[in-house]
Amino acid sequence: MSLRQMEYLVTVVEESSFTRAAEALHVTQSALSHQIKALERDVGGPLLERLPRGVRLTQMGRAFLPDAELAVRSARQARRSARAAAGADGGELQVATLHGLALGVLPPAVARLRALCPQVDVVLREYVSEDELLEHMARGVADVAVGYRPRAWDGPVWEIGTEEVVLVLPADDPLCGTGTVKLEQLADRAWVRCGMEPWVEGRPFLDLVCGRAGFAPRTVLRTEHSTTAARMAAGGAGVSMISAHLVPALVPAEQLLAVDPPWRRPMTAFCRSRAGGAADVFIRILTDDLSGQGVERSGECWS
Image (cartoon, rainbow, N blue to C red; front, side, top):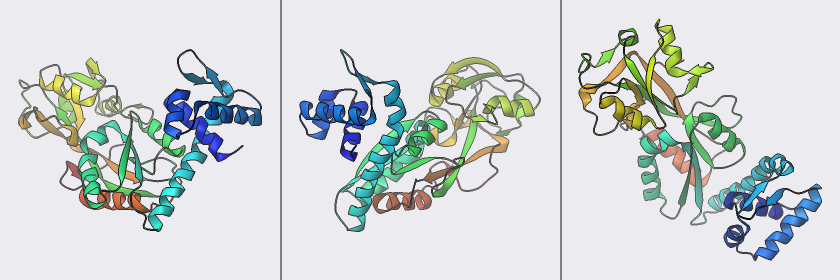
């Protein structure tokens, strides 16, 4: 079993096609098929099921893939780190993050990286949930991740700021323009909820904090994205919560309220090992240059 064979398997899975994988690897399709079959002989069974359109992993393949991905991506990262240490030009930085942070926090950091290191190509991988982000980072999907404070992470972690979550109210709500609100003042309101709402202590965050305030939120609408929920709330559907850095431009300031005490959570960058090269530059940008982007540096964290 060779690292090249594992790389071939990972690429076939990523591309969902032998043809596209062969093109990405710059090998012939017959050579790719030969190496995959040799790998399957070595591990003692089929790893891929060939379908009329595409491929899918067998049960053995699903068990084999995570460690194969980790080995392949670790080798790729090692090559990038070695090139960076040698001062080689070019290269690639793989960044994994959550969809909301990709929209609201990363654009200025990526722009700064492009200005400082124009020879570096950036690949951004977005995930919906924190668990999904952690799972893929543990499998070596990227050089650096940007998310919230990870649980039980063995690699280095850097604090890069604190996200504040605010409320969006309908225009006719009597609390508009007051600036801050106690959560219990909203006990009789309808709520617009987002499918990406975080879970804390095994419960959706809003259910948890409203329960502590003495009421259960009355949900009238659910959306997939927080920006959609905010626009629905601003349009009159109910109250919604959203990260301050994601507030849609069309929501008037008087319809935004901070919660008292504020809802905040730390944002971090984290790696599986010591960051070098472009990853190190990117982390320095994140830790130094995110103030003023809707990000608070300190404050009470939600729990």
